[in-house]
Length: 316
Picture (cartoon, rainbow, N blue to C red):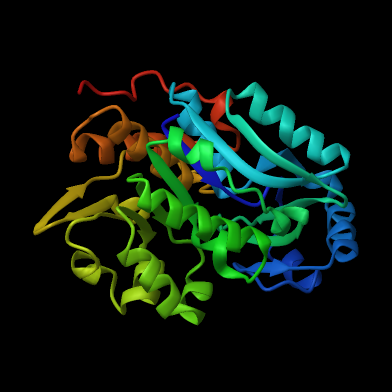
């Protein structure tokens, strides 16, 4: 196995709506709105005719799908409910050749609704269901993996999944595995800055965007001082990305693309980078591969399994 991940399994619903509809639904535009199960179901019903895609989600799972589509081997840990959505999530992992290390819990699988407005901004509504209750310690899987990947979202709240992810991270570090930490949601990072700063400093590979870097470090450009021995990737959208390592800085330009939806672009970028590193590409080539994956992601609303990666993989 190249990459082992821990996440919170969810089913994603993508819908195109007008800006005014966000306010009518009583949501905070451009943010993640955590809602009770009943309220989330009401929103899904209200936008039913505008849903353009329903598909298993979660940042870690998204990364796994892109990684597996490229030909890499990865595993996903998480808790699903004893409901049809849980079965759907499990089938999806099998279909995409992602090793499933799942716990089935009594209750509902998490759901996230992504409302996409004409300005291409995304507003999320979320209920994580039993996704916060994962407790299996996959010692054997950690030993088989080269990289251990988790995101700030998985450990933001105090719950069983967060505790398990951090326990597995500590074990993976002692076992000599590369620790990969992806920062998500700048608002949450700002609230728990010391906690996330410690996690970032102890990781071998760190991913962040400009807003997350600013929340963590005051200015994303300070990423050069985060951990000189780590690879730190700063995603800058249309401006490309920057890679910091030791005393060097590598600028990676964005590829030309017609932006349809940016959902999942960061996950695709991270998958491309890790695929490159797992296959001994240079640091620069790995970052360029991440940019190529991200470009594929933003050109359509769809899944990695539906997108051809032909022409993306450069020579080593």
